[in-house]
Image 1 (spheres, rainbow, N blue to C red):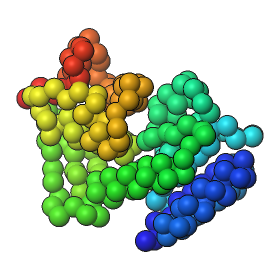
Image 2 (image 1 turned 180 degrees about the horizontal axis):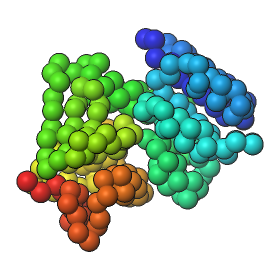
Image 3 (image 1 turned 180 degrees about the vertical axis):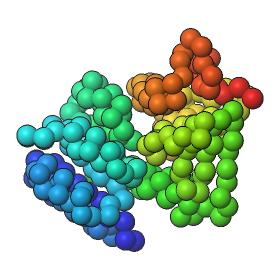
Image 4 (image 1 turned 90 degrees about the vertical axis):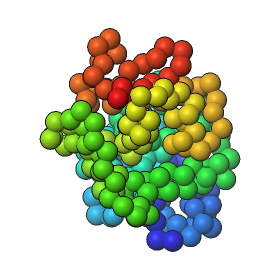
Length: 231
């Protein structure tokens, strides 16, 4: 496979280990120990996914995440310290798609990488057979091109935000639980903390769509159950 993956971690042992496991899966790995080198790579390389350590010396992984999201939609996985809940939520808010807590099992990280790439390619038309279009009340999602329009204006969504919105639109009129959303997107076992992950993505979507919790035009919260888009 030709997927190009950026790995940034100033803990050399971790970066080297991640590189080894990814190369064993035949990924092309661009490994850096500093933010400066990583930012240069982002500018000149057509990447497919980024793995960023949040706690980098100098420029943080969160700043790199934000820089990527200014121009690119490929998946971003953040590496976070144990129980650093604030960093996780901040990363998701800035556009990260997933996070994994140190210390982690390398095979778990590889599984997350595969899941993110699989979904990203699918939603960008690599494996899609038809240019499916979802239309709902001024909202237009092109599944093949990963484009989203709201009232004829482009809406810049991360791959995960696009996935959440797509699932809700495809389930119009029905409530989708956080557990169902998490499992559909990541395919992983659902844990209680995963609810925070979905909540952050929903909040970010609402901000971008100028939607509100109290008077929603699109995404309605069904308290204690999940989320739905009315028909």
